[in-house]
Length: 64
Image (cartoon, rainbow, N blue to C red):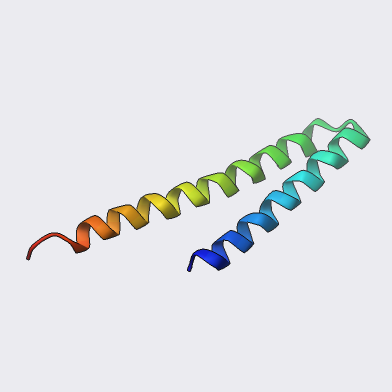
């Protein structure tokens, strides 16, 4: 499951870099903000994936 998430994350980062590059070219603040938000979403998705993985492994080791 990690590979599709990593591929999607790399695509999000590439898209955010494209938005930021367009923001510099057009001197547009909203594009820079959009690129930053997309990059933060990509980072948050990885953080949540790893946190949930650790949480689920912990819960699966609890005795019933």
